[in-house]
Length: 185
Image 1 (cartoon, helix red, strand yellow):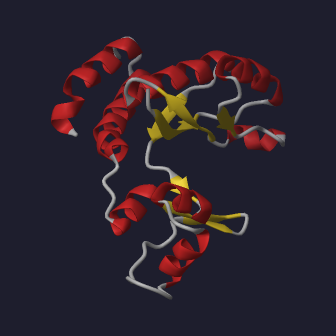
Image 2 (image 1 turned 60 degrees about the vertical axis):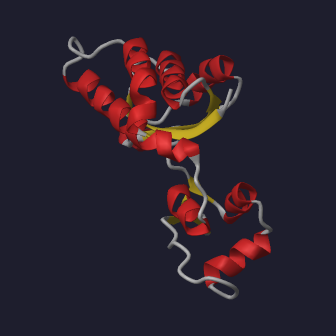
């Protein structure tokens, strides 16, 4: 069973006392933002993981359930399945050395035009995997599955937030996506 990398954008960060229930449910496989100062409770939170599943949709829906069940009142707002990567992550995914990736980024050797970093956090730059994979000429089947799956699940999350009585159960969304994903991806 493959593992899928994705992040969930949450209605708020988790409180420290909500970490143990999430850890117990996910065996520590989900990393989340926590509230360290009371004024931070109004900010969106996030959860990220690499989670096994028969499909990306199944993996996402399982983690959505774990996160929301672990922290009452917390809701998943949207999902992102095109991860941001460090230089080390890129090197591992493309099977190259750190120096080789650094040279690619700076254009010191070989082809130029390496994608720009998406953001910088704590002095480390992060790159979007889909752009890096395209630059290296890699076809990642998970990225192909990610776009329509994430679009459909984000639509479901929005519908669930606006008119919860109309939104179908998560299992129905997962089943529907498993039936059509090969035709739309």
